Image 1 (spheres, rainbow, N blue to C red):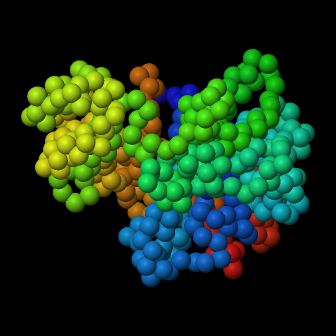
Image 2: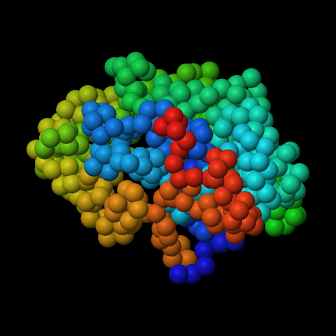
Image 3: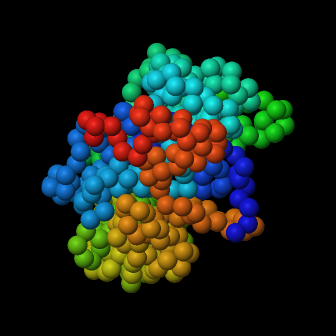
Length: 434
């Protein structure tokens, strides 16, 4: 395999849940050595599972949702290594354990930072302050360090220490208001975690920009990345409508501000759907041909974009009468042949069986020592000069302690044994933590 672009870059991460881990996943995928610094004494919610409560097979099977997902709905003996959310972003990374709450742990962490290029963390600022791991403190041991902090609301301002997860950031940014259905209030909107993805992606890009700056100047820097602010540019139309017109946008449901028809339509089979978007009269004629009703294009109610937009309820009923008689893939293929944007709505099972994704080799088979052998989502883009694939399965808790402590930090066997006794080093959470 060709050398990856970030080989030789070391990232130390105190990252939790998904936003920070997703950022470091992107860096690790392209060759950075990402070392997750984890603790045996505090178990962060949703990162490797559930604190305090050690899930049983019966508990998991009683709540069969993604948030309680383990292979075969069985948490096993080491659930922290089998948890689905961690399995999603833990690939290509290393894991070591340290207790930063002890002076010795803090000293070891700073020694690791001194050998690193980037630090990534997504905790409330006061957490880093209490630990003694702020940018100013880490810069003292590594003057050219790049530190990316990703609290929900940023490192400054009155909300700086507010706790945040993707769901409440979605609401704060206004996304929940815009994406609800027209006949329902915001409480009906489903849970999504869009800000984790946007924050992780922006953080990875910021890391590359900072590395380029350091290559030119020799200087590191602090990057203050508020997760909620990375989400708001995706809602730019509504934001600018307010600043320019003093108008608060309402929800459109599945409809579009000017395209019609535009929606999600029921298809043949149980809970099968297709999304259709028509952007021009030409595409509208193509849709009518695919439906076997070319004369429908001549109907005055639907003759142009304006009339179709004004008569969307009637139009949607006609379209769904047709789609409901056909398979969702069949509708998509028929419309795509006519140049109409259409896509079958897939569930997770469909995605793994999708012939297009199979042909591109997107999913990759990995064997994990605790989770077994499964297909994993693969590398998210392809580079013509740099072939790439997942190198290692998600890291187990403390799996790389010996490498970090003995090779990178030069700890002797005797010191290593003492650190194990003191609770820094291990592969299982401390008693009572989980």
